[in-house]
Image (tube, rainbow, N blue to C red; front, side, top):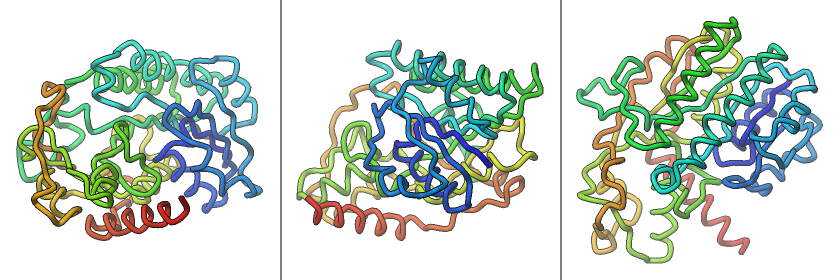
Amino acid sequence: MKALVTGGAGFIGSWVVDRLLRDGHNVWVLDNLTNGTERNISTFMNDSKFNGFVKGDIQDNHIVEQLFNNDINVCYHLAASINVQDSIDDPKTTFNNDVIGTFNVLEQCRKHGVKMVFMSTCMVYDKATGAEGISEMSPIKPASPYAGSKIAGENMVLSYYYAYGMPTVVIRPFNTYGPRQKATGEGGVVSIFTSKAFRGDPLHIYGSGEQTRDLLYVEDCARFVVAAGLSEGVNGQIINAGLGQDITINELALKICGDPSLIKHIEHIHPQSEIPKLLCNPSKAKKLLNWEPRVSLDDGLLKTKDWMIEQLKRM
């Protein structure tokens, strides 16, 4: 298979590239390096199946069109503005990237007969209300321009399935963490907390810390993403992926740092965007893709910590 991964130099994208190469597929990567880094894909450069990295933007139609001239079979569309707080402060940038950029890629998929896997997010949902967790039929609530833009992108992607018969699938991974994730503002809570714990810095938690997250290890997420592109049985579907267990941010912080005195609660910058409870019901992914997470939260946290230690040794 010939696969294009937009956002392929990013955190999740680079793991998707890794999975595709391990499975013997040919891969191209498009990334403007706003969130990603060439360091994430440097180890793939000598792989005969890695056909190239193009530094470019999904809003640049010329660059996108050139990549699709490589007889691509499937496009894993992960390129996006990903920060919820930034989307509230600057909604235009998020809309341009996540809606207009997605439209540009969709059009090339339609013209060339390419399947699109659209990376959405669990942040489109309203809070979980029961022990069974959030299914694909649960209510959505665009509490930020990021969530609103992702919902708009989802609807465009699904419209191409219904209007043109183009193979598409929308995937909604829950909070993904692991090696290569940034430990800065646009990173994830696990990487930020782990980095601060190493330095002995306070772990700042917005609000009460009783909000929960369902944390999915990145290699499990990558397997899910790749599988969605290979399966014809999921075309036209929306599919969740998560661990199926949630944890409060307070509990997560203590699990990572082990020192309650390092945990500090601060006022939320944009409390209106906070989702009180995120718990995934991944049963549809198991049914349609035979996919289940393999890495427990404790093991995933250890893998992330070990990776960060290796990075510090190289500095």
